[in-house]
Image 1 (cartoon, rainbow, N blue to C red):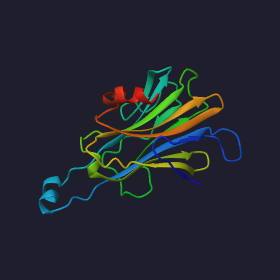
Image 2 (cartoon, rainbow, N blue to C red):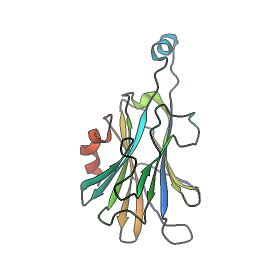
Image 3 (cartoon, one colour):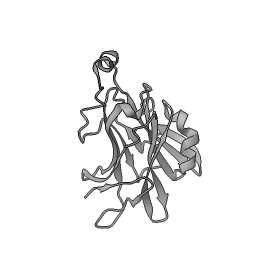
Image 4 (cartoon, rainbow, N blue to C red):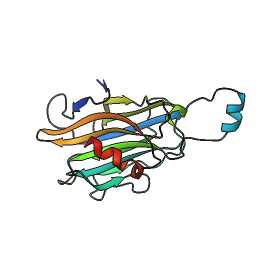
Length: 195
């Protein structure tokens, strides 16, 4: 059963029957918000929204690798991006972009992986509907947790969530912090606040 995460809520990445998860997928889904009014529709015709999912890998507070649309695999091969979706989807429950993490293969120096979403084309979250991120047990296909991106404000980015290595295994924290920036590089000052 999936858990709907609130900002700052933490969940353990332990299997319900015991043991640690080994392969998880962070999915991102969205669609462009329906424009209101005749002129808004004319002016916005053909304008798509390109949200980008990224994962920044940290070791003791410093970034050591990143996975995003221009670097689809981490250097150790443990984190993989599905590829760039330039327009979003239908706003249903399917992932438009995803990042898969093999927790058993993450380099030993990496203690946190922070997931972000950015509006590369510069539209704010006021222009996005049905945006979410979710964590899925990739081995079974079971959704473990879902975080609704409800910023709805004049922001172009969001620090979504992180997975953190603990003494007992991996743990996920929903962050949900609105921010501004077109790329993960623009978010680095905000990311370090959540380590």
